[in-house]
Amino acid sequence: MVDVGFFRVSSGVTGFDQLVNGGLISNTVSALYGSPGAGKSIFALSFLRAGLKANEKVFYISLEQDIEAILREADSLGFTEFRENMNTNFVFVRMTGHDFKEFLLVELPKILENRTTKHSRIVVDPLTPLFWEIHDIAMQRNLLTSAFDMLRSFGTSIVTVEKYGNLNVLDLSEELAIPLYLSDCVILLSMIFNQNFYQKAISILKFRYSSHSSGLHPFDIEPGGIKIFQDQPVF
Image 1: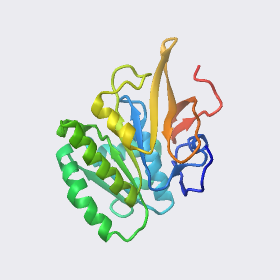
Image 2 (image 1 turned 120 degrees about the vertical axis):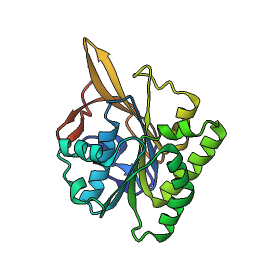
Image 3 (image 1 turned 45 degrees about the vertical axis):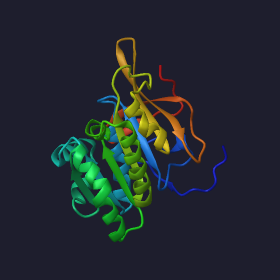
C-alpha cells in the first residue's frame, strides 16, 4: 500500500511508530485489544504523554479506575507530565458505561462545538463496560459508529478492549468484535507462553490508509514505558 501524505501523530511508544510507517494517522480511532496485564493502559498513557510533551490537550476517559490509580501508574513509569498538567492540558473523566453513553450523545457534541484547540488526544480505557450497559448488538454498533465519528472530529483516539480466553488468538464475542470493524487501526497485545514464562508481543491487525508491519514483535514494559523490539523474534 502506498501512503498518501496523511498527518502523523506519534504514539509515544518506543518502537511502535516505525511499525506503522511513521505514527498513528491524525483523526482516527485505534482499538487496542489485550488481556488484563498485557500493557493496554501503559500504551494509552504513553500516547497521551506524547501529547502533553507537545503541549496538546489530552483526555483520559476511564470506565473503571479512578484518577489516583491512573496517577500512581503514571508515576511508576516516570510520567511526571500527568500530575504537572492535571486539569490544564490533562483532563481526566471517570464514568460508568451508562454515563459514557450519555456523554457520547450529549456532552461530547457540546465540547466539540465549544473547544478552542483543533486537535486533541483521547483515550477511552476500557470500552468494554459500555457493552455490559447496552445488550442490543445493533444499538451497540449504531452508538459506536456515531461515537467514533465524533472522536475522529475531536482528534486522534485510542479505545482499549479487554480480551479474555486464549491470549494468543483474537477470538472475540460478537459485541467485542464491533470496535474491530469500526476502528481505523487494530492493535493486539498478546501474552505468549513458552518454556515456563510469558513473552509480551504486539501485532497490528489493521491500519487504514497506510502500510504497516504484519509481523509479531516482542516488547517489554520498562520504567519508561513499553519498548518494542522491532527486529527480534518473539522466541
